[in-house]
Amino acid sequence: MLDRYTHPEMGKLWQDGYEYERWLEVELAVAEVMAERGEIPQAAMEEIRAKAKVNPKRVLEIEAVVRHDLIAFLQAIVEEIGEAGKYLHLGLTSSDVKDTALSLVLRDSGRLLKKDLGAFRDALVRRALESKYTVMVGRSHGIHAEPLTFGLKLAVWIAEIDRQAERLDHAITSVSAGKISGAVGTYANVAPEVEEAVCKHLGLETALVSNQILQRDRHAHFMTTLALIGGSLEKISTEIRNLQRTDILEVEEPFAEGQKGSSAMPHKRNPIVCEQVAGMSRLLRGNALAAMENIALWHERDMTHSSVERVILPDSCILLDHMLRQMTRVISGLKIREDQMKRNLQKTFGLTSSQRVLLALVEHGCMREEAYAWVQQDAFHAWDNGIDFIEVVSADARVINYLTKEEIQGLFDLKYHLGHVDDIFRRLEL
Image (cartoon, rainbow, N blue to C red; front, top):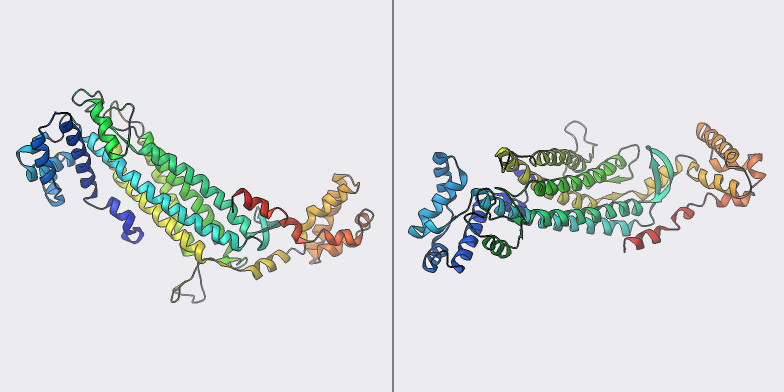
């Protein structure tokens, strides 16, 4: 992943050498449990504990020869420990160590993403409360529909982020599992009790059954959840991009002092952060598909998943961390142009009240199909000729046969559409 998208807190979890520290953490946990069970001499355990350390440079030197990363790692560690190093990795297979350590990294990455998601939600809540009654036109199919508030638009996003937080919790739980069961998962050379104690020590769930690896449905669950969160961020960023279009211009993402929008056109203020986030979500979806392809491996395992995961796991965690941080900044600094929202609402000459006129006619005894035809005819006449809809309706003898001028006037009061805003916010406990 390019450094420009990597923030230090998440980058640390995936930097070169960090996985070796987690491998060592697992190896030491296994050795500690075996020492407690009398399977390793306590004196040897003390020496292991005192001398075991990772030299990433040495690991890479050995790996260049042996072409096996875990063997290279073990050889480098044993060089540091000496004779007592023979008690490391007893009865284990490489994936016992690597998969369990990977679970630690994914768990910690997931927790950091959960923190990011919470910060993003907080930003949405602040702006939703600020714009709770900020009236704007709603759009369906890109066409003016009926009024709502910008706060309600944000409330929809908040509820979606809450669902994503639940999904992330489940995904973190699913991927926070370890296995210390040997070459094909039979515990032939290491007791199940060792696995249970090691996983408890590491704060991981014990896989109920495994073969040589942890099953990749867990990782696919995690990755598809990240892609789902990315999808929500794309949805939000796409809406902001649309609302920032010159012909709409109801919101604008933050534009920093000294920032330039175009090398050719000095007037441009482009929604580049939202565009970046929308593009990155495509990467998350592609990586999630690759994670699902990793589920079906040959027999007790093959190696096809390994090379894929070296790319998709760090990249997706780093990407989503960046996306969440960026969108938190966008929402926090979003310019909400209330005057433009009002102007846009008036562009359709009051047509957004057409349903109220239709319902009022029906309530006063008119047949629905007949009322619909009258209102549609009046609406099209107002739109095509640039006349206020209320004037056309008020001059329609068919309408005033059912409604008084005062009743018609009341049907165009925008406050009617905001009657349940507070109810919706209460559902979100806002």
